Image 1 (cartoon, rainbow, N blue to C red):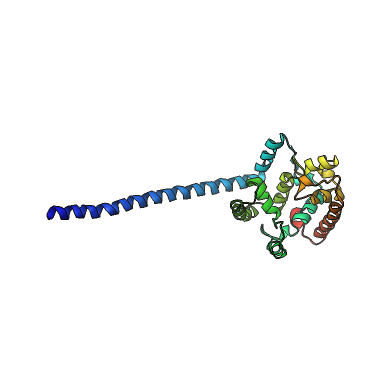
Image 2: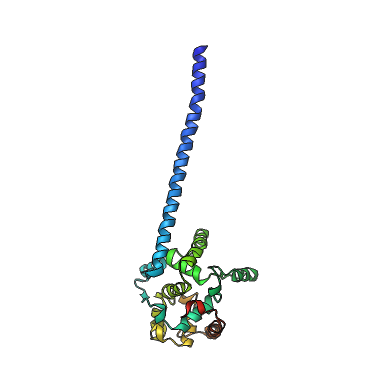
Amino acid sequence: MAKKTSRSSRARKAKPTIRTRLGAAVRRVIGWLLRGVAAVAVLLLVWMLAYRWIDPPTTPYIWSEERRLGAVSRDWRDLDAIAPSLARSVVAAEDANFCGHWGFDVNAIRSAIEAGANRGASTISQQVVKNAFLWQGRSWVRKAAEAVITPVMETLWPKRRIVEVYLNVAEMGEGVFGAQAAARHWFGVDAADLTPAQAARIAAILPNPKDRSAARPSAAMQRKARRVADGAATIRADGRAACFED
């Protein structure tokens, strides 16, 4: 009987040992995952901080389009070397309340939901995050990453830098990226020499520049360009362009 009791006692002791080992293994895996997430977060933070002062050499989307098309047109210009009318036109067309939000325009999102609009209410800040740090597409994973990163970037970058990067990485024609390339492609001038009417036409073809022409706009695009020009004048007059202008 003593031997049976001893074997039974050893069996009871073995069970918690297995559970303990499994628990330790699970904790190790969780620890590795947490360390991995922390490492990615730190790298992303360093990346964002670097781009506050260093001009992005490319973006995931520009790189993919270059591979698809064989070549793309892009020539970085600082904001001082871009016609102010283009910055105002793009902000008026894409995100008129840019200076007053922290990365998300809650009112625009609410209005889009109430109207049942197919087009989203992405701000210029969200578009910079998507273009500079993430990938294209409508997956929930990308949207979640964009929602986390956007307010961080808004905290680290001044508004003027956000507009500057946007105007240099946004697609403004098929294989045409940034203000300088767009100005040369559509009108044969430098970005600094764009007229307000030309700037409004470029802004009007966003966010679908592949299917629209700034040089030969349709009647609908001409009407939109006039609305954009009016919007650009409005945000200049009411102070909504102050955060990215000298």
